[in-house]
Length: 88
Image (cartoon, rainbow, N blue to C red; front, side, top):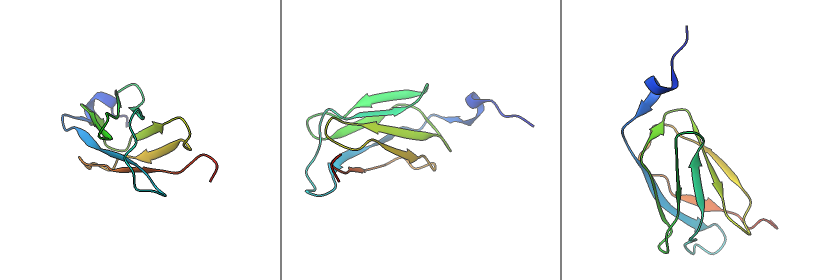
């Protein structure tokens, strides 16, 4: 049995803030993406918002100077992200 990706899509948004794991400081300019579904860039307050999510998909997080991160979406609507320095 197959389910279409569209059938898994929800109308809920995924939002949160992006932080530096070691300092706790907010990071702006971070690319937050659910491939082929939605993308956003964190603002000066570290805030991002994706307008569409798919349960079971993953969020890719990319920022200069930080290690890239992949986080699976489990149906939550708020996801705060903590990034490690790429030299860690």
